[in-house]
Length: 75
Image (spheres, rainbow, N blue to C red):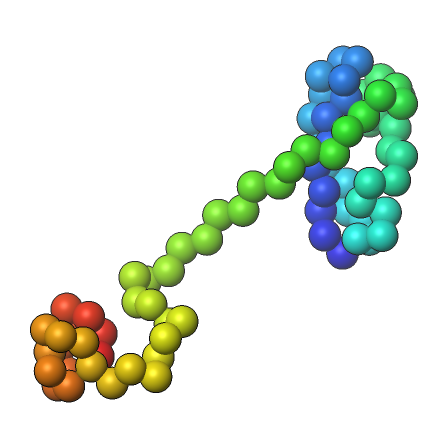
């Protein structure tokens, strides 16, 4: 189950809740004040790669390595 982030518009408390996807936008009371004026926040995701492009791995070479194995592009 995903963790969703919420904010209370009354007391400005930000909190998280583990809920099913079907309940993501369902009513949830504020954990601090118990108020009903809560909204789901947009979630931010961080990801990192080693720098290699994996989307087009069908290509066997680039213009700089001419089909050989070079450390510059990973081919």
